[in-house]
Length: 111
Image (cartoon, rainbow, N blue to C red):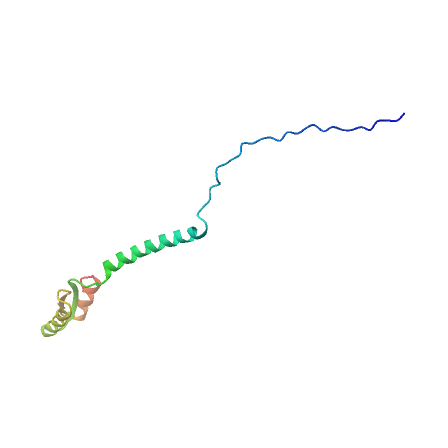
């Protein structure tokens, strides 16, 4: 007796419908904007730093800076006169009787 061909029927799979995410994926700055933005920020911060630094230190000058002199009163007056001529009020010249006294003043940060 002839047999009829058998056919297998696979169960019908229905695709699961997931909710589609329509929001764009978050992205960082890309392209030209991604390069120019950090460069611009660095240039602005650098410019501010340089401006403040130059404003504070563009012409530093001493004010009553103590200087030790060993020698005669005449030598003290010569040094004082030369310093006052170059920068009035910049130095306070102090006379010491000998080199040892001047070195001690230097070590004690008096001059």
